[in-house]
Every structure is written in C-alpha cells, then in structure tokens.
Image (cartoon, rainbow, N blue to C red):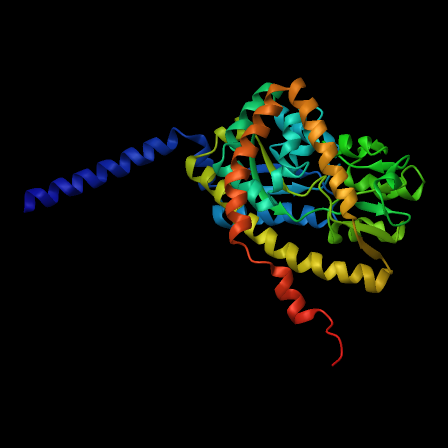
Length: 374
C-alpha cells in the first residue's frame, strides 16, 4: 500500500508538471489565464437599434461564461467600417468578428439570401434555423463562403418574426399600388419588389429614414416595431403594411475571422457556440416583449395605422418568387442546391408542424376579441 501511494504521488506530481509545461506551449491559453483574449466586433446596426442590443446581449453571455478568459467588445455600425463592408472587414482581420444578416452579402453570391429572403417553402424563422442546424444548411453555407473567398466562420441564431411589407404614404390595397415607388429593401427581396414595379434602393438601416425624409424614397421596409420606432419611421410615415413573404423567415449571423476563431482554445469555441444558442432563445423572448410593447406605442403615441397586406398581394409575391428562383437557380448551381435542401426539409418538417400546431388565433379571439352584446 505504501508503494502504491508513493506511485500515485509521483504520477500526480508528474502530471501537474506536464500540464504546466503544456500550458507554456500554448500562448492563447497562457494569455487567457492572465488578461482576457479580446475580440473586437462591429454590428451592422445603429447604436440605438434593438438589433445592436441583441449583439451586445450575445457578447455579454460570452463574457460572463468565459469568466475572464475571453472578452468581446461590440461597436455599432460605422465605428470601423460601413454596415455593408462588415464581411470584408472581418474576412481581412480588420475586425475580429461582427453581427448582421447574411442577406447583406447577397452581392457576393445570391445563394446566401435564401437564409432570409422569400417564403422559405412555408417555414417560419425557427424552422429555418432548424434546417440550418440539422437539415444541411450549415454545411451549405460553409461551401458558399468558400466559393465567395471569404475567411470567416458563421453562427446563425435569433429567429426573426415575419417582417412588415413596408411603410408607405397610403395603404397598399393591390399589387399595382407598388408600381413606380422608390423603395428600400435588401437581398432577394430586391428582385421581388422590382418585379412588382418598384425602383429599389438597398440602404443600411441608419440611412433609411433620412432618405424617406428627403423624398429619395417613397416607401421602405426594415424589420420590426422596435427597430422601426428607434429609427424614426413614425416621423416620416403613418402607414405600415403588416405581413409579407419577402422576408417571412430570417435570422442573425454572428461572424468570426476564421484565423482568429481557429486560434482559440477548444473550450472557448464551445462558449461561443453555446452562447449563440442561449442568445437565440433570449432574443426570441425579448423580441416578443419589446416588439409587442412598441407596436402599441406606435399606434397610441404616434398615430401609426397598421393594415394587413391583402391576400392578393401575398399571392402575387409567391408567384413572383417562383419565377425568380427558377431564373436564379439556372444562373447559380449553389442557389439551386440550397433551395433543394430547404424544400426537402420544409416538406417533411413543415407537414409535421402544420398538422400538429393548433390554431392560436382561435384561442386569442376566444379571450380577447370583442363579443357582440347579448
């Protein structure tokens, strides 16, 4: 027994010595034990937008879980580069990472817009994220980024509710009402609104309201009640059309410079990934709270009128989308590859979702709709 105890002591002492020597061989780990590894991020959102707050929420989760070993600092759009230049800046290492949406990189490869534009074969944003994580989307995005020649790693998170059709000077009652309007949108939605007759201009979020104010735009869409309120849409328009298939399912992208990411210790990579999952859930809950409150505020405090986009307009969007994806698929094999993958997942998962989900509108109306007097 004495010999065994002595052997164990020698083994533990030796293991401790080896561990200490190994730590000296990995500068990132050694540095993490002293000062934190710093990652400088920029979002594609103005500082007062709830989207920038979502980016900060993700960074806070990482910083809390890393316990002093890793620290992310998030700057607003324009602090280092313009919003639409974020991907190139992260790829080049000018920034260590960033927060945005893949639709912004539509100009480099049209296929990336399928992570946010269009009806997604009837999938909602959470279902689209399920496709990305478990239906092949993650590998396809990596393949597309390789074709784009960008040196980045992406994490998708944060399912966005269906976005409004847009803000206008008067209600849209038919598809023809969009004809001739100077309109802002991004991604493949550019093709959809253009096919409806609009003259489209893709602008970052912070530039939309000034353009509306100066008459450079007649209408625009961005995303949600909270973002639209903070950007000041209510000061330049009092009409917002709800529901649309141009961006009915979208999510955020967390970008990392690939070299910087690969140099991190394995356990910190896990922190980054699990923080994204935690932030995804938290973002959904916060959005339900804040968007609903600001939806009421826009109506009560700013006299904004919300209208449902007519079904005829929504049907026109679907028809345009079908024609558009056929054309884009012929031009870009990766575009078709993503569509085929989404279609297969949506047909299976969408059927299950639609067959099993109850009609929540029925319950809502039961409790809150006005009932006729007895």
